[in-house]
Each structure stands twice: as structure tokens, then as C-alpha cells.
Length: 152
Image (cartoon, rainbow, N blue to C red; front, side, top):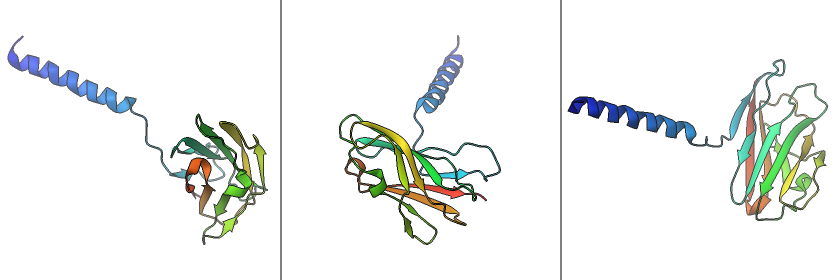
């Protein structure tokens, strides 16, 4: 094998290693997701926030204009702090003009423990194009914001 062939083989191996490394790295957590129009049957994207010692993941369940309530599936996970917050008191939905709306209910695991899941429900916001869910104080983080742009 001549010198140039060896350099070529080493280059190909190096390039392959870089590509493999790029695919093995975890994707960054995006904070903005575009939802499909209500007529389509795609599932909305989950947005995760891993600040501090608690990971909070939120998946919107139904933003249809005629839905009686808007539901968000919320998951909280940690291995080090107690999850004792009342999610109906630390969560707000922000409308187009920054107006805050309080949750109607939380249906899920009660305060306490290290792993909680449930559904946070809000009254629908008529004509909203952007939805921001804010959850305050989880794991010592002042505020976690989850933003979706709704395509209608």
C-alpha cells in the first residue's frame, strides 16, 4: 500500500468516526415546536426542560378550537429532590397578550416523590396562535417556559 492510499484510508476512517459521533450525541432540547393544524392527525411534540436536578417534559394533547379543555401531559423526574409542588398553583398558561390563565385541574400523581405524571387542564384560548405554559419553582428553578406555535 503506498503512502497516499494509507492517508486516504485513514481519512475515510476519521470521517466515518466523526459521522458516527454526530449521530450518537443526544439532540438538544428545543423549546419551540410547531403543531400541525387540528385537521391533521400528527401527534404534538414533547418539549423537555432539564434545568437543575429535575427534568420536566410537557406534551400538549389537544389544541383543537372546539375542544372543551386543552390538556397538557406533564412528567416530572428526579433522583434527588422531593416533587412537592401543587401543579395547579405553580402553572400558568400565557395567551397572546401575555394574559395569564390558571389551570382548571391536575389529574395525576399527588405532590411528593421523585417521579410524577399527569394531565394539566386549561380552558381553551380562542384564536390563540402562540401558547406558552409556564411552570414555576420546580427543583429550585424560578420558571420553566414551554412554547408552541399553533398552525391553523
